[in-house]
Amino acid sequence: EIVMTQSPATLSVSPGERATLSCRASQSVSSNLAWYQQKPGQAPRLLIYGASTRATGIPARFSGSGSGTEFTLTISSLQSEDFAVYYCQQYNNWSWTFGQGTKVEIK
Amino acid sequence: QVQLVQSGAEVKKPGASVKVSCKASGYTFTSYYMHWVRQAPGQGLEWMGIINPSGGSTSYAQKFQGRVTMTRDTSTSTVYMELSSLRSEDTAVYYCARALTAPDYWGQGTLVTVSS
Image (cartoon, rainbow over all chains, first blue to last red; front, side):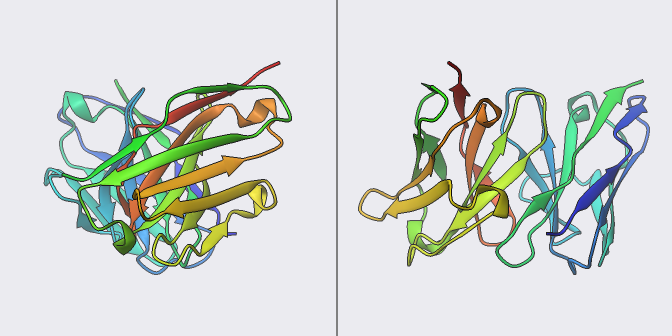
């Protein structure tokens, strides 16, 4: 099983600042990497797939990069609605695994 | 528009089984895989398995092998996830999510509570 490790567990950021979230895979997942945002009581929302492609309707302040085992989600200027938990996920073959999540909180 | 509508909350006793449904609409049911993901209270997301609605083939996470069964009914565009031998640790919100690669639409979630 591919293990996904996210860092940091919690990120404290002021509105308008940049946030950088990391995700590492225990083995190469090529570009089969997605990022999700989840708010309390809601289903996850797809932000990025293919490591760097924004999903439909996702603002340009969200960007993804990386391939193989190292990935990054960047939120260029945090808005109030961006404070949430973010998960990375690999979708190699017919098996998915998720990272444990990074909580982005207001500083 | 694409919708995945799941069945309502369930309360089950330890050792029982639960069957959660996910009814798809707004797209061609057999053109997308369907995954099941669960989330225990205050915890992260855990992948359970996948079903191909076209042929019915499945693949399950090793953790759930032998306890989970995913099926589909193409006549009603519905997929089902049945989990048996329930224990308290299975208390969670269960989601269905459609995907070709990464899941773009998710159901609203079904809370399953296991309690004696």
